[in-house]
Image 1 (tube, rainbow, N blue to C red):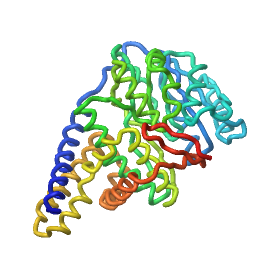
Image 2 (image 1 turned 120 degrees about the horizontal axis):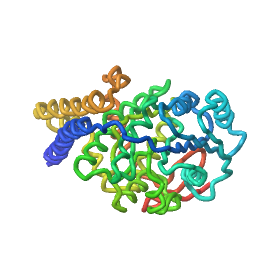
Image 3 (image 1 turned 180 degrees about the vertical axis):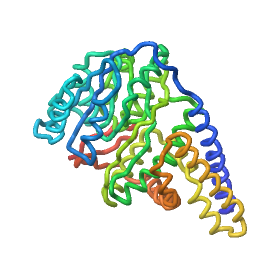
Image 4 (image 1 turned 30 degrees about the vertical axis):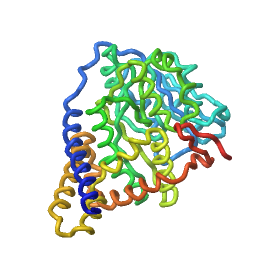
Length: 374
């Protein structure tokens, strides 16, 4: 009976791998035409401290080949070393309108949303790009977004990302998982049900849409504000699309303990935000199920081999055809280990309702909101 249950779950996971391959091909088939006009864009950048590669990340936004844009930065404290880095970049790129805001301590749990709210109030333009500090882009980034917003029905665009790790083995594993497994879920959801969510590192939206969904006040008490923003946008009837532009997401160089806490925070947040979707992640990773089935029934090894092959093909679709990811391609031999680690972290995400975020402890409520404990 156990072997049959495992076989059924593995079959579901193999179907998911096949769907990933189809979804990846569909994604690559959609490319926007060059925009007829270039609307001015406001870029909002919340900052908190200096992480590895921050100055290079920020520099790429100053180097946009775009006729009219501004960049707003926000830090809580003027003594934050990120503030000095912003001032150096402003001096280096005097032709780019850039401002630095000092926000003080947030008045509600989500500090990132508080910074975005403060910056939006000062932003001059109607097209707004919200981008994390750990993202890196090329000069055509804004032009691609402008082409996608040329469709008046599009209200929100969210960018897929290619994860790049720092000098840490555990961050390397996490990047491989993001590039071969996490993106699969995004692509399959897009193919089956459309985009009804957004991805945190970079989101662009029309100011009118943000006002219609309650702006940042509707997200201030949620940890997964990106998911909530995309959900509210889709519910309002606005078009939500997955951008054709792939950003780089620099995930840093966390040691084992810090990386584990970071992953558990993400898993617990996902479980609270979309519980059934979190359960469904069981099917995004066939290798642990295949090994369990092999242990129960060694004579069923052909099924296990087929599952492993499908996992490899699905991962290769995201790495090669969607992300054009040379980083993961060179570390392909680590995919099985990452799959096992991620399965263990996923299982651990079912337990516990507290998270650590930027040195503070929070409690996650059942509806995805969170509260500061200390």
